[in-house]
Length: 377
Image (cartoon, rainbow, N blue to C red; front, side, top):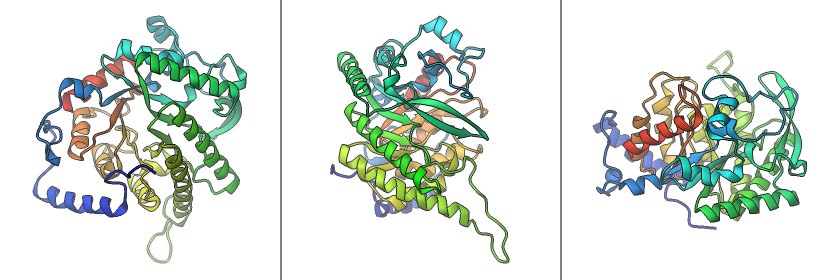
């Protein structure tokens, strides 16, 4: 097993938190000026512009409406619509692409960026049914069927080889896979949870073949977690404990597999258990594995106070991957402040440009993110 990162154990994390608490007691994290990168960690040298760009990754999610897709299954969310982010408007402006085009698209639209964050739902040749397996889903009271990339088939493995060839030709690498395929990781049904873990393992194998360093797995369980209930004494939340316990056991097994193939499993604040950074920290501390860490997103929070405080809470667990995001769900998100929190926390990893929604199309939004992140690094 490769040497664990410095902050990967509970003891080191707790030591970091104790040190941070003393520092915060004497000074407030700056919000209006950018600290020199690395200064909090004994490195007074600011990053050069070329070094800053190496810290960035393009992201396929903002570009999802550009991608050639399979016909929508019954009940599946539509990919059309209106406005600058609609499929018609995006394809008219930039053309239609597939994942095999993404390395060159990164070069063409994100100057100097040579890393990618790839969304699992865009993998595969959509004209070849042998690469996809039928799956059922339930979300917000709706159910439906969809077809998802199956990394284990012969044709899928050949397609992954094609992607590797495109990356080698362009010099653009896959850093992270934002994966929605493994489901039910904290589910109370043992069979569903086993299916989710097994799906994660085959995807970890696939990520290893394309050189990805990290892969997100959603915690699963209810999209809105159960709340505490009134008792004769102090309120309790025994229902939540059941899901957290299952998540811990699942992520331990996935992290062990990730260590064998060299790909870290990450938890993103992405609804359910992970909507609360306290739950994320509990799971990560209990798993206590160098191949299981946080990959926070700037905007995937349930209320505005978590935009900055939630990110700060996850810094001791965040080493490899972060999603910088602009999302008009929130008013006036200070992107540069978010980056300064990363700097202050000693984050040296990769920042992916995941524009969600707002006044620009997906390419323009990701380019806006790039400008803001570079300004604060």
